[in-house]
Every structure is written in C-alpha cells, then in structure tokens.
Image (cartoon, rainbow over all chains, first blue to last red; front, side, top):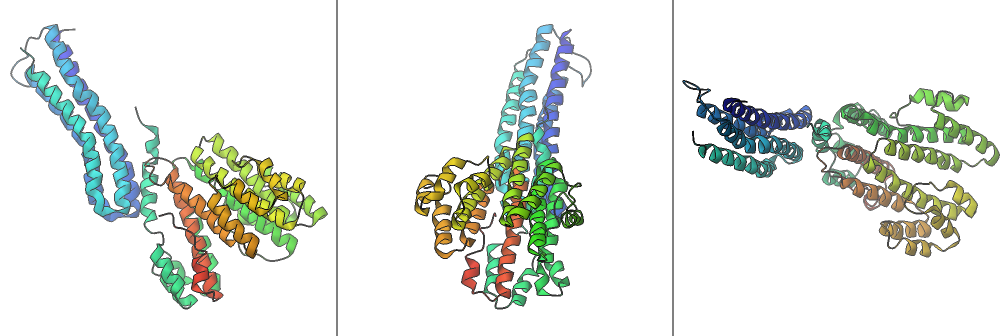
Length: 156
Length: 334
C-alpha cells in the first residue's frame, strides 16, 4: 500500500467505527423511547434529547476523519505525497477515536436507555440521567483529544 | 457486535411507564377509609379502572373488572415481550388455578365464579374437559394429573388432593420451563414459591393430623428447604419449625405467620407475608434495564394490586373494620 491508502484507512476507521458506535447507541435508546412513548406520548421531547446524546461519537469520528482528509489533501487542491510511514502515522492517530467512539457510543446508549426508564417514572430527574451518560462521553472526548494531538504531531 | 439483551429495551421502558398507573398507597388508604362500598368504588373510578367501573351495574360483580384487567395486562406484556415464552410460562399458573376451581366445583357441587380468563388454554375447553371427564385436549402432563385426581377422588373423597396434585404439576413444569429457557430469575421466584407452598402444606397436613408418609408424598421437590427436613417437622411442635428456620430467609414469615395460624387458625397473615416475600424478591430485578425481570415484576405487581382491590371491596361489602382490611393489604411493588 502507498502512504495515501494507509491514511485513508485511518479516515475510514475513524468515521466508520465511531459512527457505528453512535448508530448502535442511538438505536438502543430509540427502542426504549418507543416503549415509553407508546404509553406516554407527551414525553417525546425529553426522549428525543436523550436519544440524540450518543450521536456525538459519530461527530467526533467525522471531525477526526475530516482533519486527516484535509492534511492529506483529499479535500483541497491536490493530494499530498505521503511516505508509507506518514501514512501509518495518520492511521495510528485515527485509532483512539475509532475504538473509544465505537464502545462509548454503545455504552452511552445503554445508560440512556436506563435514563428513559428513569424518566418514565420521574420525568423531573432527567438531568441526572443525562449526567450519568455524560460520564461515558468523557472518554470519547479524551480519545478525540488524543487523536487531534497525534495529528498535530505528524510532520509532512 | 450487537448486544443481545437490548431487545428488551422497548418492553422494559413500556412497562416502566405502565407502572406509574399502578394504584398507590394513598389510593388504597382512601378506599379503606371510605364508609361504603360505593365510596370505595368511586376512588377506583378515578384511576385506570374508571371505564370499567362506569359500566359496572352491580357492586357484587366487581370480579369481572378485575378479571378483565388481569387478562388485558397479561396479554399486553405477553405481546411486547421479546421472548414471549418466558412470560407465556406464567400463564400455566392460571390454567392450573382454573382447573382447581373446576374440579372443586365438580366434586363439591358448587358453582364457582372465580375462573380467571387468562391462561394458555381456552376456558370453555377446560370447562368441557372437566365436566365430561375427557382430558384428551389437555397437554400430556395436565391430562395425566387430571386422571389421577379423578381416580384418587373416587377412593379418598378428599378435595385437598386437587390442590396438592395440581400444584405439583404446576411447579414441575415451571421449573422445567425456567431451566429450559435459561431464566434463573424466574427459577428463583418459582423455587421460593415452592418453599412457601411446602411450608403451608406442612402446617396444613400437621393440623389435619395426617401421617408423615402422606406429607412426604405431597411436598414439592426443587425447593431450597429439604423435603426430609420438612417431613421430620411433622412430629415436632411448631416452635421447632420456627427455630429450624430462624436463620433462613423465611424466619420472619414463619415466626409471625405460622404462629398466627396455629394460634388463631387463620392463614391470612401467612398468605400476606408469603406474597410480600415474593414481592421483595421481585423488587431486586426492578431496575434491570434489559431483561425479563421488570416484566415479571410488573405482572406480579398487577396481581397484587388486584388482590388488594379484592380485599378492600370484599371487606367493604362485608362491613369489616378498616383495621382488619388494612392488615391484609399486601405490600406494593413500586
């Protein structure tokens, strides 16, 4: 593989895996939300907010992917000539958000499904349900931070 | 990697929302404190039962409301459950209950109206089977049990045998089903119900003065209390049963309930404490986010609610004092 292909693999993983984590997480919350809404349609607004939260991992993944694409010239004027080693550096930089985005998206979804059960009985406690989910979010943010720092460190 | 247990998300969230409609302590208090049955029904008409209460022509027919509600709730939970078999096995309890009622009605010649229209088998089918002594349409295990009951009753003329035989079939099947579907939480509930049934059987047999052999034959297997330890208790005074179970989970229940039964001859406290015991167990699974536990818990909670409504309304119809109604009211699941 050429350097550019390896870097593109990094883009694919960052966007694809983090996005899958979000999709699964949102799917889990959606199932629970439907259960609640079938009994209590007035809570639609609240459940929608909860359901949207695991979407951030996919956004982080897309952001990381976009940064790489910009660095290597996929978006922009012309492709940058990459050595194989530079290509690997981009792939490695993509991994933190790809891995943590995937797992945190799923687990955040599970926490939020429980939060749906929580607001089924106590709608006024929704804030606490969100706080528990944000605890999971922390690690997606750390991963994105690591990814960005690694990208900044790559000399072209 | 799709995590399998999330298939329960919809059902659990829906059941959590349904739980909010369960009658609370305050509503029961108002029903208990109302001076007439009509007033108690009025409290009920402010709840989810309102439509049914409005159509009720005679207070004495309130059982119809309760039966309809139970059947509606059971079918709803069955429908939303991602693994219907787990909920479906609970229907067997109603089949067995109906069979008990029908057999007793047949042998004792009384018309009973306590049939529950929930269960895996059609009520009219069951009624025909019992009245015509033709059990071909029943599942095999039930068919065999029904034949045993028929034969035994011809010889012994003892209606108690109906409960004992049918309970055995019920719990054998429930334990088998729970193991087959790998449902340890359900199995835990059945094991506890077996223990409680065995304790009641022991005391009943003791009070009837029947033999140790008879007791050994009717105690249910699969409980946590060993059958031979229980049979040994038949010749002992009640105190030693209480001390034997003093370090078990059943200490309070036996201490209070059994003592009352032996002193006053009324099993009602033991029955209440048994129900509360199962409620406490099911509460452990109340907040499981993905699993069958909250579904089973909700069904039980509904059954307890219905039982409590029955206790209050029967109490009001018979003009029992509020205090004696209150002490029979089961603990709430929520």
